[in-house]
Image (cartoon, chains in turn orange, blue):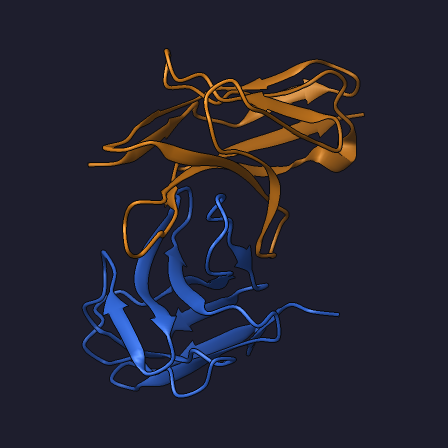
Length: 114
Length: 114
């Protein structure tokens, strides 16, 4: 089956520190990969995406590269801000399945201290 | 502005009651989804619908029902058969076609059983 594994949180960083959140996946086909962010009490917002090997998704200073050889899609940011505090979800979706639903990791909570 | 709305934001249910969660989208998306989120966990798929008047069970459909009479609307009913309904419920939609499979989420409904 399909699955996504994320590093457990919480991840606690000081402002301006470098962020890495690890994500690896298992998929029966060739998935599209996503990072979503969830602020307290809210729904999920798409942060970035990638659809094929070596694609780099980027948005708001966050980046992630689709690594097929290591089945990974690690999220990085060079300098975090307090406003980045949220829960981050890695997810995959397969084009060749009828439902095209998202399979999510368990989420990683990021806490950035001033 | 286009988007997805969910109502109510908070919902309280007594034991043995059925409740219905609303989800409306004006993105003109064909596919809609319901996910359930429990604390510290990722999202799990309850039901999905690819077109009007058609829907399919997801991974945890027991105790839930849906309808899709209009393209814009995909209400979820949590029945008394759902043994542990307290959770955060998220509705999402997706445009058919394209290569990314990205989904857009509503703000969620938090259901609590009293």
